[in-house]
Amino acid sequence: MLPVRPRRLRQSPAVRRLVAETRLHPAELVLPVFVREGIDEPQPIEAMPGVVQHTLDSLADEARRCVEAGLGGIMVFGVPDDAAKDAVGSGADAEDGILNVALRAVRDAVGDDLVVMADLCLDEFTDHGHCGVLDEQGRVDNDATLFRYAAMALAQARAGAHVLGLSGMMDGQVAFVREALDEAGFQDTILLAYAAKYTSALYGPFREAVQSSLVGDRATYQQDPANATEALREIELDLAEGADIIMVKPAQTHLDIIAMAAQTSSVPVAAYQISGEYAQIKAAAERGWIDGDRAVMESLLHIRRAGAQVILTYSALDVANRI
View 1 (cartoon, helix red, strand yellow):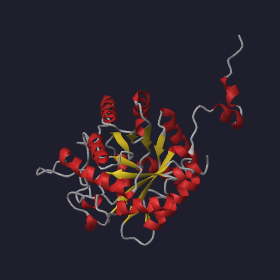
View 2: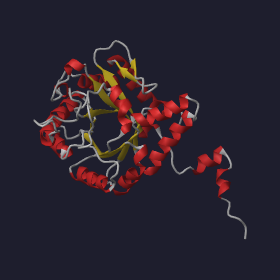
View 3: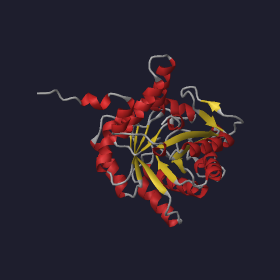
View 4: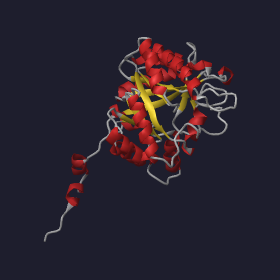
């Protein structure tokens, strides 16, 4: 009997390219960006080489680069002055709050040529750093937080965001925000639900980027990394509440959850390659331990192969220029 030879289909780059089962396209990639209040020039983020806190002007330029590269979207995070933070995150829905000002600047720069996404969460804007308002015992008050999310959603929709990224993991947040938007005439605003957002040690660099005031952790509202069935329940709830897109975060450490979501979801599935995942690759590459460019491409292919149709990654622009 002649041997079976699968290697025939691996014999050259051209053949491998021809039969590749998974491909990356720039339109599937979204670039997360940070815009900081009160700075005159972009500020490097030490734990995230190559990533900066933008000024309004540099953010608009970055958005234009995203359009030129053919990216699918840009996700904007606001970094307010510490003096602007308070217990309820008032800056989150203020018309002159840094995130809402930045959203208007990005829409002015790119119009509808790029999907403009806004982070809808209070953590950057609260003096305690949690994703919601606190009760008298210092616990996150789920239902009181929903009213703040609705106010934030309306502010972001008015500022021009196409997509609102509900990242706080509050129970009922999708339905509450959807109802508020619809009643105000924003029926076309898209809701991206962070349906399976796990608590993780890999958020550290992000917290530097947004100058988080958090003390402690968010384990009471973000998911336990030990649980998978719980993620399916969260996904089903968000779908029932009207989510237009669901997301799994972190991506690389939860490929099984991405695959499960892709098999069960009736809407597009997104995944977020978070700051710590990005930083690990960068740190190892800087030390010469790995080929950084290859590692980034492999990591994104894994996420895409698992079933994510949209990938948020800090490497989006670099990768788009190489594929």
